[in-house]
Image (cartoon, rainbow, N blue to C red; front, side, top):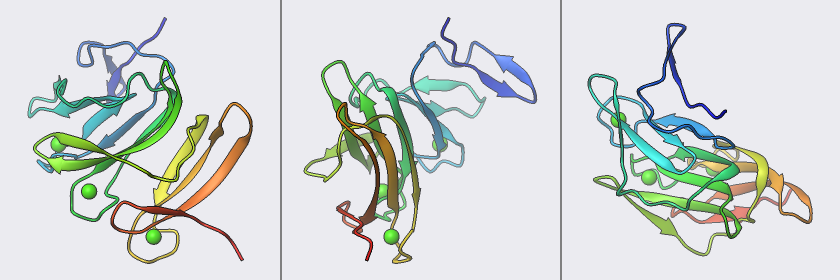
Length: 165
Ligand SMILES: [Ca+2]
Ligand SMILES: [Ca+2]
Ligand SMILES: [Ca+2]
């Protein structure tokens, strides 16, 4: 049985997320800058309301589904709005994508990024090279090989594969 639950002070509340999803990841981030943490579950974005209920933002259409992957908030272009990194498997392909937060709950896909589509992996974000923008470390499986890759951010939502040495 697949379950998606919110736990508050040790109590599970099954009613606040209207989907039971498996094989999908979650992340918290205040994408609309209204002071509360919103959710991404797989590739569905939920906005948190003042009464701690959630509204599924159906108009935000990201690649779906996002199985066996990761979804992560991060402000890749340093404009104060959280963007999204998604990787995993849809029904058609393995993918790794960044969607830029344009404000007003509008997200647009950034094309031509140097990422491999990966599943069964993980991602974390941080300013690895201390130049002021978010970098990515990514692991995963392309169906042919396992990869561990570090990408250096370039502020304009471009990324370069980090080549040590
Ligand atoms: Ca919010
Ligand atoms: Ca941003
Ligand atoms: Ca950086």
